[in-house]
Length: 412
Image (tube, rainbow, N blue to C red; front, side, top):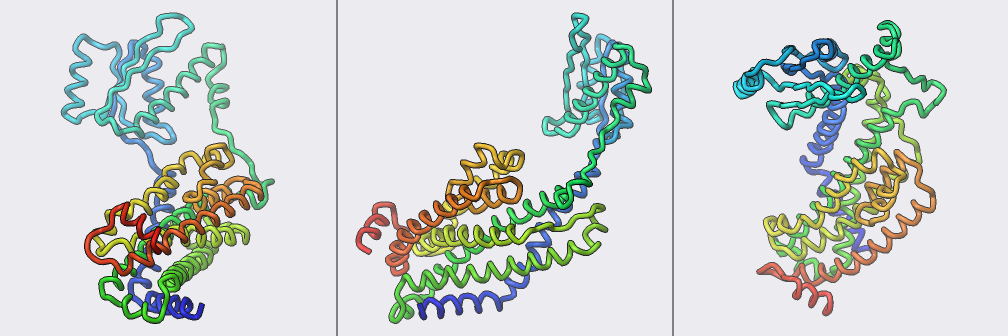
């Protein structure tokens, strides 16, 4: 244990004194904070300013839609109305699309029966312009609802009153009222854990390659066992990551408790973290880091250069990327079946279970079971990684193939 402590102390002090540690401590939260708060700032102010044309034989629905798109809350479009269409209207509009004079046109075909809706055909200049398409779709729903209510005998003032947005009063919710800040806090901590686990996992692999290249291992192995060296590296590099995360969390809580962030974002955003959330963040960060850094240590021992490591780093990146892609499932329904299953996959547990704890209500039994599964997986990965590490750090030359790695496991 004394040797493990010495290796961990050396790794920790070497890394924490470098300029890159200071730069990353400042740069990563700036980039993450800028991205998250910038998205929130722009998301609340984004309006569509496209120039489109509406072609319809029904002038009333076309002008109503024009008014909704030109003066709506989320739309400041320029809308040309063509009613009725001529024989060459479509070819003229296609020509304007090709010349980039229009962003798209909407062709409305009247309903064939009394109770049916008209059909709508949207032709965009760019297929990726989903904002304009969604804005037109939302405006159409509003216009059709207004027309339907008017046909049932409601006067315009009653229709306007009925269509007004509803304000939800959540003042009785107490501390749960600040749901937006809670969402952004959970979102930020998810990405923080994602980047730190990946970054420091790769750092363990790079550290092993550097010492393997410089032959420092051959000197150290005279007095220290390979398992102690691997444990010291994982603990030392992980302590650096934990130090950095601690600095970021304390800084974020101090900054968001002032009016500085609210001044720039235009809303009262702070980090409503509970003690339980912080404890679980540290627990799942450590479990995730040990799991992925053990894999990284084995990958570093198997390779001889950064180039070879890059060919194998998909074993680290792919499970983490799966967690990132699954956010679209976990955020809308953190206690659903898909979210629960994902949170029990050990390689996804640190990120997904923490997200569920922050946004949902997983039971204590589920949390304990996920931690238990992770501990069993970590033990198995450490068993395999330590045996690959023991042989791999002394192997030079060509990259080992699978049969050779299996022989390492058998003989070590």
